[in-house]
Length: 590
Image (cartoon, rainbow, N blue to C red; front, side, top):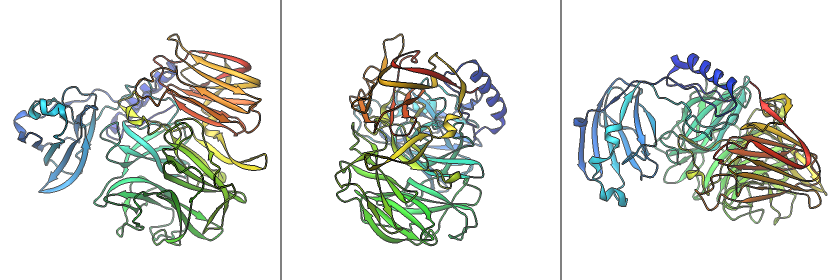
């Protein structure tokens, strides 16, 4: 159900989309995104390369081509690439240029720089492999190419069909999400120059249904203050910032020598951003000072901001989104403190509030996870209603992190997505062209159990609408399975290779577990094979299991339990066995 337009070759969109839809009607296997035809790419002249030392090379680039295609080999150490125009550095990036064998290519855009450039490449000379192989013999020099297009055809068997993924490259935290004029905007931490963490920018995707996404390119890129870490965006309906009514105002962390908070604004609906001239707008001497989340608070008629400061959350107020007043901190002694607090959010639920706090490490089964606190908030201070030592987890799987919500969501809803991975192994999961996906869109709310308040998590109506209303019994690589439970139940997904995922519901102990120790490829990390277990806060009547090539999200239909785990079966699970319940399979709509 994913369609991705190629902003680098617009004339190919119609052909690409037609081809994509034909493939989709044939099967619900791996989904292509805006594949483009084979493109003409020109190799560089070997005589243009000047090897200045054992780790430094320069070459002149005189071309009208739109891209320099960089060959990437993931096992290599970083090379630092500078694009120089008229003696000035106009672009810098780090990437793992190929020494022996190329894993994939990535595009370096040249269109904004003109056709007479100097490319300066320096390598980390400490790597043992490089001391044994002269730099001039690296394979990258023969494989660098110029081109007017970049082929983004899907080559990954694990790429999801109905979850958002980057068109190419690395992705982690969702950023700056908002809804406006029928369009959902999702920005994300993106490395356009490789499928491992580096070169943080805000990538941008848009959707009208939270299922089919179009990649819009890079929206906010690094500058002299630093690379672009996580943050938020709001629709400034009343022009409080002075950038114009309904301008999109984003705040993000500038990650330079220290972490500071910067503003950018968009007057074209979030397509392009202008950096605020007086950045940074918030500073601190706290080392981990990041991930600002802004929202309009009707109660005080001001903007609130919550951001992570070490193992606390700082709260601020502002009338204009530029000048911020510190109000209070929350967190000391509350919840889990085994890792750094990150990516906060603060949501009003009737007369209560939920404070979302993502933490890494410290998750219930290792690595990163999302905890939350329920309490009250007067616009200045958050007060938690639980005991300090109590920790509440939003999701009980290993692959649910950086959860944040969309600003300006319709109907007053709190629509959230999370990063579907874990920092324990995110850089080394068995994909290459891209890494990581987001969860399905989920609506957050509140429910009570035994006198305590908890965050409810339900699949958003848009996520549910992606599936056919006609049920079957055949398990598909991308589908939803609804299981009506009686009491205890066991659900097994398996394939002909003997790989399986076993889910167990114990009604008496009010618990649900998922065992992925035999799920497929688990060899890339000792932390991956795991059994995760969740409380269900009462009985579960209906389980909704969202299966999508390399992920399994299991939700209680009533919102009381959520468990998200990624998997890498060598062939799709094609058999389902249910004991203690009845199941129905819902295919993706065509």
